[in-house]
Length: 453
Ligand code: AMP
Image (cartoon, rainbow, N blue to C red; front, side, top):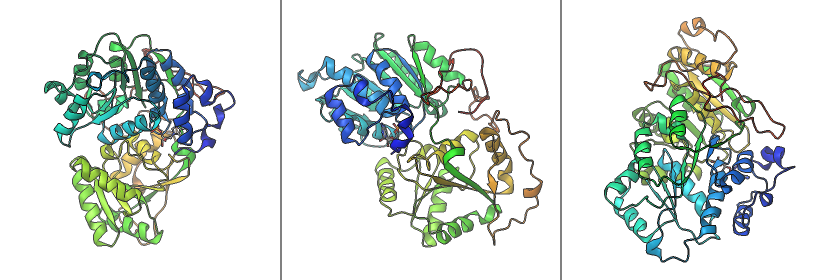
């Protein structure tokens, strides 16, 4: 949970009680221990309550979930379907997320913030049995949180009717793009009533997201917050040059010699994640892997063991790790460097989420040098490189590898992974306001800046 200190910057002018939220919601908020709204909450809540469409430029960790869930609950409760018979609870709010984990977390938030309101919510995603979800939908829900694929399965099986949706929320739209969900999103949009409120949250705004947003949103209000926990500020970063074949040995050495207890390790492939977890286990380091090939119950179980400190190391792929809400995560290790530099920022952002300082360690083989250089360009700074005694790389390429050419941040993608996404389409660098938020960028303007966000 972010520390209250992070949010002090706006506390002078904003408290939860002057955002227009009902007593039931204020009670739930204070039971969560929140006293000060985060910048995205302070800005988004009044906009949503005013029934405007909203474009939120905010990443996970900013408090965006409460930013849309709280006003959403209030809007639904104020029109109230609670007195209607259960069978007539149609889905009135639809929240789409890219991953199952994020869907489950958003649903948990809806439950926690809505605990004093008579509204029902549920979550549906793939990888688990279809029928219990269908049964729950039949009983009636006001708020449905879903991943796109399973949602469309339910529509096709006629176990879900979307004709009463009043509010649509697309969460982490850029991740949906990365994961190839945009066609599914368009199909879902076609199933919704035309008259509705739309909210879209995304950490970045590449061209496809801007196009998608402008195709269905009506005169949206743009809200942007500064990336909290910017890696440069909160996360200590270091890279250890090492020969490729000795990465596992070095990782085991670091975990043991530093007595690390909760380490999130990123690998590029599911297979690599499994293999590494097994190898670490054999060395006496309790480890498991989490990735898309694992069943949902297995992923949930593994995450629980990690959170409860039964596992020292959780090995994950980028997509599986996205949306994991792990508090106080002290160490992130990039066993493989990501091919997309922005993923590095997402990965290491996991350590700073608690507002506590974290440490991000990258194991950099000779082959990884160009990727590291792209990451450094994106962040506009170099990551300190430190050889671990006993693991000196043999390879002279380490010394010869080119340094980033300039400290000025620019395009970071070594290679496009999406055919239409060769450029990291980002909004121009917003200027900072006095309240710590940032000036909204012209998300739909033709001009594209290249500053990282
Ligand atoms: P999110 O960006 O929605 O994933 O939220 C990140 C974390 O911030 C979650 O653990 C929330 O419980 C926590 N959080 C949200 N709003 C607040 C707040 N106003 N004060 C303190 N923590 C918050």
